[in-house]
Length: 140
Ligand SMILES: [Fe+2]
Ligand SMILES: [Fe+2]
View 1: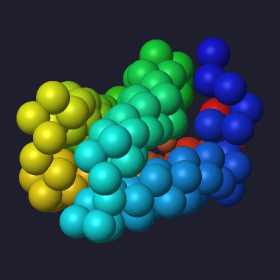
View 2: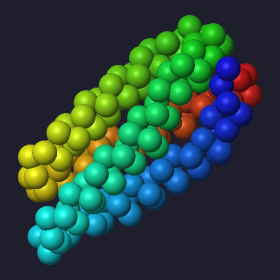
View 3: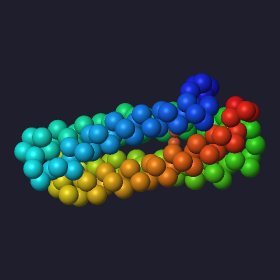
């Protein structure tokens, strides 16, 4: 069963923007990697990876197990958009895995490129997802 906060577009959007704010803040430390010590860079990257996993990937998991299944039950016409949103989740997971593997490589420039790609993809995904929820929220 979908949790009440995920079912409504406004509350769902607030979950997205809270996660985004925290991730953005942590990413700002990584953006100064040229000036930081190796220890700080390592901790910053670790914090960014942990936030993506706990705030975005776990959220995607919950959506796939509950919200998306409930939307599919409303009407099969929503299946293609659910498939596209699930594919976004898959790419978010792949990018997050790439970001995590940067922790041992210590290539902070590349880590930052991945972090920015994650942010852009997640912004596009979040906008599309909220539009869908707005369309179906009265039937959830
Ligand atoms: Fe999602
Ligand atoms: Fe979401």
